[in-house]
Amino acid sequence: MTAAVQPATPAAAAPAGLFRWMTMFTVMTGLLGSVMSSTMANIAIPDVMGAFGIGQDRAHWMSSGFLAAMTVSMLLNAWVLGKFGARHAFIAAMLIFSAASILGEVAPTYEVVVAARVIQGACAGVLQPMAMSVIFLTFRPHERGVAMGLFGMGVVIGPALGPTIGGFIVDHLGWRYVFTATLPLPLIATAFAVYFVPPRDPNAVRRRLNWQSLLLMVTAVTGLLNGLSNGQRLGWESVFVTGSLLVAAVAGLAFVVRELSSKEPLVNLELFASRTYAASAVVSLVFGAGFFGSTYLLPIFVQTVSGFTALKAGLMLLPAGLAQLVVFPLAGRLAQHVRPGWPILFGLLAFAVSTFEFARADFDTDFWTLALWLTLGRIGLGFVFPSLSVGSLQALRPELVPYGAGTLNFTRMLGAAVGVNVLAVIVDQRTASHATQLTQTQTWDNQTTQLLLDQLDTLLAKGGLAGVEATATHLDYLGRVIMAKANWLAFQDGFLAVAVAFVVAMLLAVPLTRAEGRAPR
Image (tube, rainbow, N blue to C red; front, side):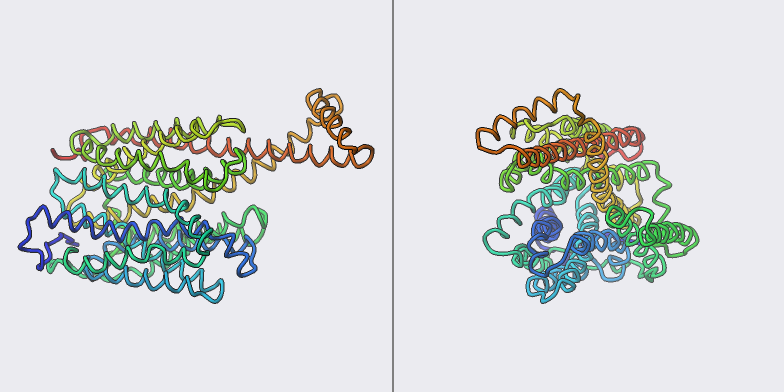
């Protein structure tokens, strides 16, 4: 399928350079609005639970529904561009996203809230690879590194700033306004898209959508997320969890078999004939798991272990966000002059070191030390994204770029959805395991514990508390200390798992240091 981008007629008289940058501004404005929504609404989950009287067993779908819809809809990029063209598809996605935002704000029930989030996620999933394709094909080869760097700024900085902005809105305006806080961005993007987003290429072939493959992928992703999100609560051997994971495995296998035999595949497996693209897709999977997984872990870690307030946790993200504003354009220029593997290897190493240092952090690690390590990791990801995008798509023929962009974004978001759930499971299970191990060490001959209890006895005696009441206080306090220690150790395990995953990704990225996929000068 051909998906070459043609300049829009209303802008034909404008300088080519100006048109390209206005196209960039238009799609990035819409993209930023959708990307920020991916994390802003998560801050409102506790308030939504209180408003509708629901528990965690249902509340997680406010996030999981968004990620699942976003992940699957990314595979529709090539079909949407071929059938409707970038301009019509972009405007439709923006308007539907805006309508879903309003629906979420006025939702009378929790089910409507989830429906609004699913619709938002589906639109966001279509928008990300579409924006990537439009920007990549609009800019000339020697400009694509910078363009992908700016594109990466929106993809990464949006989720980083979303929780801080969302928290401010929830505290001062109420949770409902989180849905419409970004509404001006898609509306502005819609107005500009009429002139600056290219129309459908008249030479593009309109292909039928492979609904069977799409249904199989929806089943696989939904089953996987259902199994992972409910495993800890219901038990990994429960019928529901094992059934969900089994359905996911069967549907995933059936999807691969169908794609191999289909004349109109949802995922064009020809993409993976390129070693550069295949390696990029795997690295993108780990990238998504690491970035979104760490974004999930960090706020909880600094609030439960380090004792930060929500505002302080949000402020910790600011130095990293400011650093990325500088790094992304520089990394984009670098992607134009060196083979993609070298910046990717550097970025993966920097992020691995960052998460390893978080795995060593304890109760006394100060704010600026944590902010420094966080900034190092985000700088590393800033080097990864432009080179990964340019290197993978540069290795493809132009007609495969829309497929490649959709699949690359799909792997990243699939990694995000799975990574968040897996890390949540790791922290929960390791907390229980560490608590059991620490409890077994609390014997009468444990001198450290005995010294702690003696000091507590002295404090309680000064307060006039003794006897049975003092004993009960001993046990309660000791239990709290054990759980706090277990929670800290569990977070260390979670961060260590991310660091190990990025070291493995470095080995997988080695093929990207070779000649194929080198960005043109």
